[in-house]
Image (tube, rainbow, N blue to C red):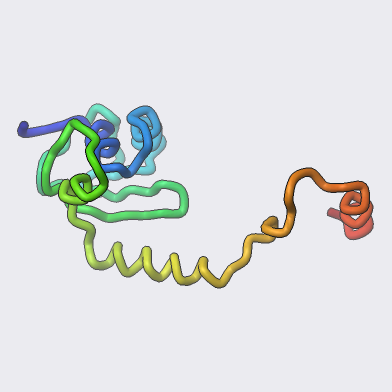
Length: 124
């Protein structure tokens, strides 16, 4: 195998849970190949550099191998090599998120009558 569709590789490398999610991300400009936005059908080859954004997570990886089958995570990690800058940026982001509490963490379910009165009092 010399080349493989980008969306299929992203799915096999476990960056996205489904191929359609991978295709939507590529089409939405969340994945760049060698610095340029592209289409899901773009063929990638070993040595290509990918910049992937999936939610808050961001990776910069070099394609090392191709696979069109989704396997276990340890096998999927063999398909790419993450750059040291990318690893450092992800670790920094993870550490900064560790100390920030989500404002909605204390809210469970729908607001009660009392909660609504409090929200109305403080202007939501």
